[in-house]
Length: 317
Image (cartoon, rainbow, N blue to C red; front, side):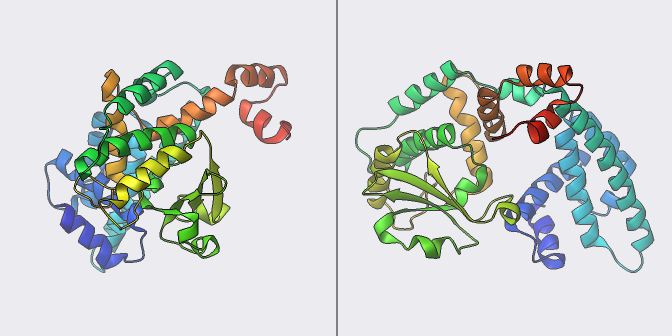
């Protein structure tokens, strides 16, 4: 079924970004499995039942919104001269449902209260330290296979996200020493991001070219904090023994790690302490640890406006 769904997107919307297409395919597949159907036309023929099923199965508003957004994208691929009136009616219904969800999401975000998912995947500094120690303990002293390398890779992934809260675009990164590449040329790439080891300075930089908000912020270079240079040199040297593809993250069979696999891998890194992790939650944790939201909220109340206004308008550098 996944292949059928993906082929439909490729046929009707070939310019769709791969990461967006993969997300749509995953959401449509989950929805079709939930409905126990293989007929994609159900997305516009029986949208009321879809709304009912999604509300029952997915309690989080963001999850519901992701399903409906994917449905709209697929319905646009299914439009013909004979069903245009029916598909347009369905698209309008999804638009209304998404607008209602946006209001709910905005209202929930304004409370600054963790979602159920965030509660389950939230970790403390002590948890973070324990996970880091246990993952490091699993790294074998000698690495001669991709399976052994994956233990070091997992520790690298956890440490990288601890120091730089990027998204899953990290999976689309290549890995070099600075004397192997021309950084100016790398900044013109629209496909890959780059993790670069700067030998003289013994520092790590991350070049972001392909990420969610690139149209707004452009190609950027970020200094990776946390003294990761020596760790990544060890990782690089062990990788060179097994592959010359220069991908930053590879699977236990030596292939480039897809974004969804990275997400799943990160989720499971918390298993060492019996917890599930989340890249999205990690980003929330990073901001929460650096902003006293209660203090901001109290001050905003005192000034008779909301916390968003306090941070975006009144707060200055």
